[in-house]
Structures are given as structure tokens and as C-alpha cells.
Amino acid sequence: MKIVGVLLLSLAAVAQDKPNFTGTWLLAIEKSDFSHFPVPDAQTNVIEHKGPNIKLTQTIRSASVPGGEASWERHYTTDGKESVNRLGPRDAKSTSKWAGNKLIIVTKLETPDGTSEIEESWELTDGGKQMVVSRDFKEPDGGGVQRLLFKKQQ
Image (cartoon, rainbow, N blue to C red; front, top):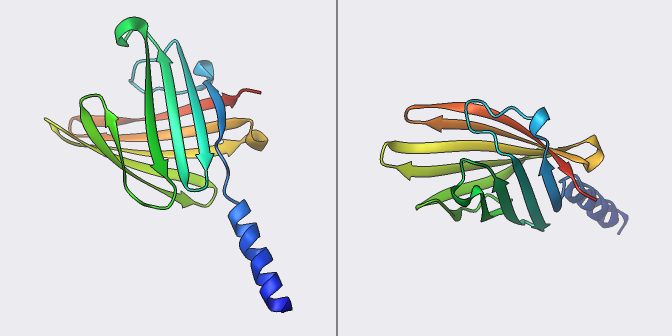
């Protein structure tokens, strides 16, 4: 019986190692690297993370966005199952998995120019007060790398 108890405790400890991204996150524009992509005036990510399910609602304010502001909702799972989200006029297919304490999301999108791929990692830092989102864009005509820093709102 003691072995079963130790096994259950060790499994619970492994499950607790994975961060929970739930919260309202504001983009720290001055501490982020946007590569050659447009810099927004503001960005807020609201994340609901329950078990393997993640709902991300992203709101961006920018002169480059029609109407000056836009919101998108995306859904992911952390168990490697494919998620399909609408990005503009096209469907994007994503798979997500854990790499230690980082969540890796790979998204593929078919465009008239070919397949675009974004490999994104999410990582909590500063005791969960900050989230670093790194993106590697691989596009038929090039790509780029971003490193975005978000601060959790209380």
C-alpha cells in the first residue's frame, strides 16, 4: 500500500510541474522584440487554462488593424491533439505539447504563396508574474523571430 501512495504522490507532483497560464496579460511593448512585424499600440491576452484546454482571447490596438482595434479567439489543447482556429480568411491547424515547463504551439497555415508555420513557446517567469512568448515564423518568402513579454494583471 505504501508503494501505491508514493506512486500517486509522485504522479501528482509531475502534474503540478506544468504551469497554468490563466490570467489577463498585458504586452510590455518596450521590453518586446517584434522583428520586422508591426508594433501594436497595445495588446491584451486573456487566457483561460483548464486542464488540457486553453482559450486565448487576444485584443490588439494598432493603426495597422482595420478600425484601430480587433479581437480574436483561439483554442488549443496541451495534449498534442490538433486544434483548428480561424486566422483571417483561413483555417490554421495547431498542435501543442509540453517541453518541460514551456508550452510549444506549432501552427500551420496554407496561403496562396505556400505553407506558413509558426512555432511558438509560452513560458512563465518571475514567479508567474510574467509570460514570455517566443515566435519563430517560417514563411515561403522568409520569416522572423519575435520575443514578447507580457505582465500579469492583478
